[in-house]
Image 1 (tube, one colour):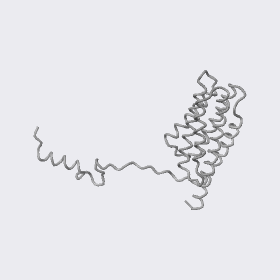
Image 2: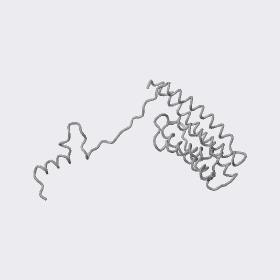
Image 3: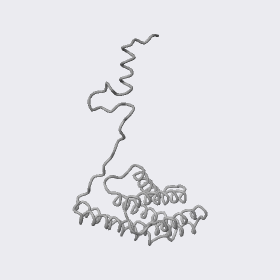
Image 4: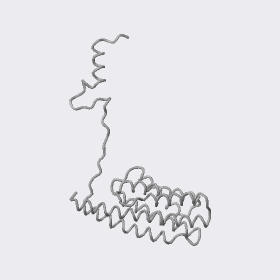
Amino acid sequence: MTRTPGLAILSACLACGACAPQGATPLSKTAPATTTRAVEAPDAFAQRLARLDESMAALREAAMRLPGRSAVEHRARVAAALGGLADVMEQLAGADVPGPLRQQIMILRRSGGRLDSGVEMAVEPTIDAAVRSAAGGLRHIAGELPGEAPLDGAFAGLSAKISELDTVRGPIHQLVTAQAIRQIADIAGELRERMRKAGGAREAGGS
């Protein structure tokens, strides 16, 4: 099939964008989409911080009650800790929770719900997956919150504890779970302090 001169010229114009409408972006040079995080009002930040403090208190109390005195009690107490941790992570993240972090929070809530339901299930793998999701979520939040003291050592210790979970069973697994959740609560507490300082700096700067 022979192309006419007019059709050849039109094809060339479309390829280079010369015939595109005024203000349009040529197909070969599509501008990347950008997202802007909304600035949080001081009152909204203060309310979020207050809710975070309540969630932190619940998380620390649940962590200190671990391990349970029986397998059934341990399941219920871990479920309470996972629920408290999900609340903490949501408050730390704020209104604009990115997709991967939202998924990790959802894993915490689903795992806690299954543990609390009492149904027959693989308890230890469920707990392990939830603890890993918590660690990943907190790492993401730490990357979003500025801080003077690095958390590399705390996350390294948590990673070692998570690896230990893969090697133990029964009552020892319950003990290591308690230790891991307490480490998670400590990291969350440091992130809470970072959040408070970041909010105070914005307010002082008038932004």
